Length: 144
Image 1 (cartoon, one colour):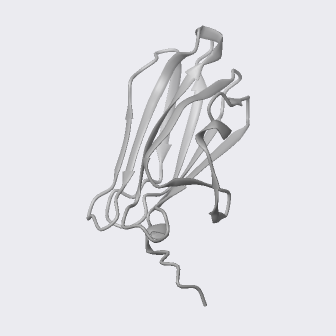
Image 2 (cartoon, helix red, strand yellow):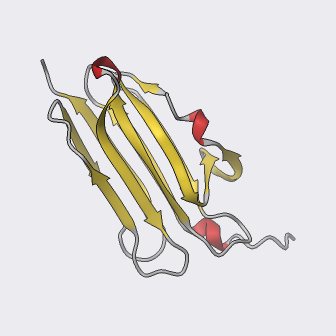
């Protein structure tokens, strides 16, 4: 039996970026203020932002970003990232911010910015207390 306190692991978000179009996008500027990133399905296997920063997501591909609070810490997870257009000088398509605090009654999921060449839709976020949950983000470059 472990003495490790995993309550902070209950504050988590899984963000699934799905390229539903025909042009690639890239992940940029992923950073965390609180918590950690972890490997798919294993909150104890920490990964770092450089795994994702600069990653290209091609047509019909998906990337999953997982984040949670740290064990033995009374904190949740808070972070942000951009998706950018590699065919337009890495112009920002959209910026995303999340906050899933420990011990709070509210979560935050805040996509900002606009690039009229792209359509972005998201669903699944839990803005009440507990985990922010699994958020699906569909990304589509409009036809030229």
